[in-house]
Image (cartoon, rainbow, N blue to C red; front, side):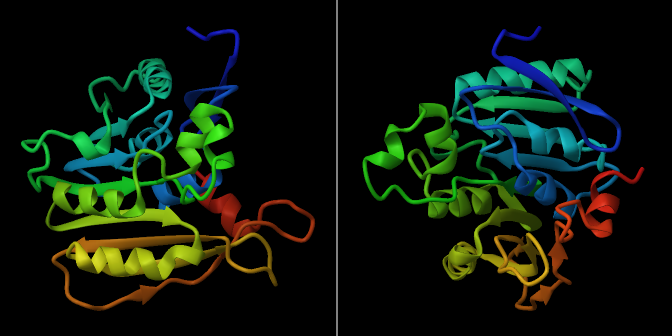
Length: 244
C-alpha cells in the first residue's frame, strides 16, 4: 500500500490514518484548524473541500458529520494518496476524491447544491520565476499557479446553496482581499478567528467562514494561541486536537 517514499501518520481523535510522502506538500496545522473551525451539519448534508491535497480535511470532517464529502485536487499524485488513505480508513462510502482543476469543474456540478465548502488554498501569488522552480508539487500547493484566491472564492460561491457555509484558512496579510472577494461573490463573512503562534507574537493564520446570501454581521472569535513559551501546545490546542 505504501510506496518507498511514503509514510503513514495518524490524525484526528479516532486515530485516522493518512498517507504522506516526500516531494509533495504534507498537510499542516492550518488544514487541521480549518477542519475544526468550520460549521458542519452533524447528521447529513453535502460537503466539498477544494485544494484537498492528500485528503486531510475530508478525513477530519468525517469525524464530525455523517454527510457525504468530496475532495477536489488538481495533482494526480496527491489524489492517489488521498484515495488510498480513504481506503485505509474504510471511508469509501462517505468520501470521494475528484482529480480536477477547480476552474474546470463541469457547469452541472456548480449547481449551488452544497451545504459546506472548505478550502486551504495556495497562500502566495507568483511573483518571480523562483516561486515556480522549487519542487513542482510543493510549488503548486504553495503558490497561485493553477488557481488564484479569486478563483477559489468564485468556485466556492458557485458550489454553495443559499444559506450554505464556506470556510477558508489563509494568511492575515490577505484578509482584506479575502473579505472583499467573499462579498463580491455573495458570501457574507460571519465568523473570524485569528491564530497566534505564541503570546506576544503577530497572528500568522486567519480562519473565516461566510454564508451564501447572508446578512452583514461578523463575529470575531477569541484568539487561539498554539504554543506555550516552552514550545509545547497550549491547553486549548491540546483540547482541540486530542481530547476525545
